[in-house]
Image (cartoon, rainbow, N blue to C red):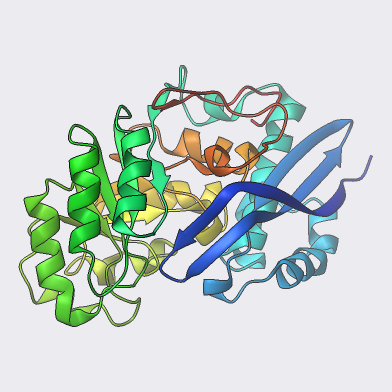
Length: 327
C-alpha cells in the first residue's frame, strides 16, 4: 500500500494565560501529521511560531507542498534537504520516526540505543507578570526541583528576588526571550548570579548578542532564539555557554540528534526545550533529553487538556513515552 499523509490543525486551551516578554496566549495551536503505510500509523506534532515567521497556514501549506515527496516514501535523511529546518519538517520527521517504529516493532528508544530511557527532571514555567504574582506562582511550585521563570523587562531585579525568596530550594532558570536591554544586561546577570540562578536564556535579541562576548558572564548563558540547527553552533561559542535544542527549531529529531552531538563536542551545556504543545510534541524530545543538563518539557502541564494517552508527569519528573503515544 502507498504511504498516505493527513494534516490537521488542532487547538488545545491553555490553563489560564501563558505570558512571555513578547506577549500572551491562551491556546496552543498545533499541526498534526499522520502517516499511514502498510497498516501502520505514525504521528508527529509541531507548533508554528510567529517569532520565526511561521503561521498555522504557512506551516500547513509547507507540509502540503511536500506531500508528493512524503507520500512517495521519502526517508528522514532525504527530508533534511527537501524541507528547511522549522516546525513543518519537525511534524513530518517525527511522524516518520513513529511510522518506522510501528512498522518494524522496534521502538525509537531502541533505535537510539536507549535500552531503558529514564524519567527526567523537567522545569515548570512561571509566566511573566508582576513580582508578587510570580512569587505566588513560584510558592505553589516551591517543592519542585526546577523552575523556569519568564523575565525580559528593563527592570527584572524585583522579579528575580521575589521568585528566589518564594522558592529558596528550587533550581531556577531565567528566560528573558530576547527582552533585556543592553544597558541592564550586566546588572541583571549579576543579580541572577547573586540569587543562585543556574542559567539565563537568551537575554539579548538574536543577531544583536555580540555584547555577551565582551563581558564577564557570572553564570551560564544559554542560546535559544540565536540557535536553530547544527550550522549555527560554531559561531556562538564566544557568546554562549549552553544551547536550547527545540525540535520545532531544528526541524525534527533527526537533525536534533546531530545538533546535540556537535554541541557536546564543542563543549556547550545542553538544554532540551519545547514550545507550548501536547504530549505528542514532547515525546520525542524526552528521548532526545536523556543525559541533557537541563530539561524543559512542561508543555502539557500548561494545558487545560492534553492528548490521550499523554505523557506521565509525577512531581518533578516526566516519564518516557509509551508506544501508544509515540515511538
